[in-house]
Length: 219
Image (cartoon, rainbow, N blue to C red; front, side):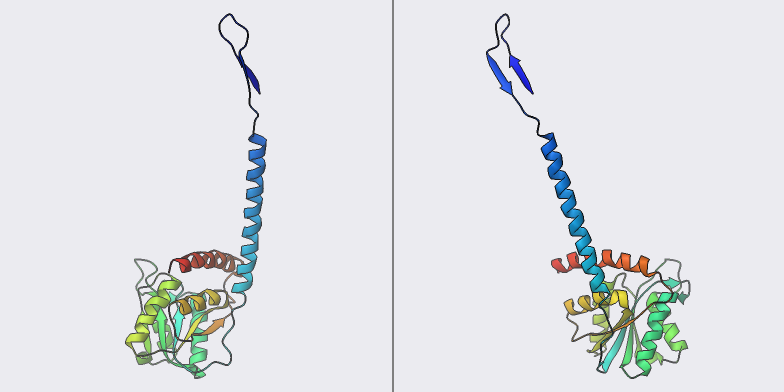
């Protein structure tokens, strides 16, 4: 674009020229956006592979405790997904993989009668586990807190070696968190879900795992 500067009643004394840079700026923005989209898709693919890589430790060495990570309650009863974790924990316990339970999870709703941990204990006791071998952690609201607060329970009870029990899609993040928190050679026990939508939960886990990696940088 060009324009001229005049003095009143005279010919132009200066000529100034300016070129528009908007098209170039748009190209830079489009390229940046494209790079971000490609990087995001690459990261999602990487995380998807990671969360699918979690398997039960084999061979499993007998541990002091199985730590069952909480999931939602449905009123007074564990949700179907949480029952899957509990049933798998019972299977490992009966096979001699550990001698004690730590059940971890806080209160889902203010009007609920039981925390996740209390609901899990009731379920285990109803399936033949002695109350004296079940320890509760009833304050946590996240995977990180599950494992952080459970570690305190383990230390108070003189238990050290553990099997972290959860679903397979959640296992990678749970194991990484346990190691970050200083668990001594934590083992992993994971079960597949037959009652939950993997499209939903694996998609959520990609976001949760990404959040965890940022959180890990600040620890």
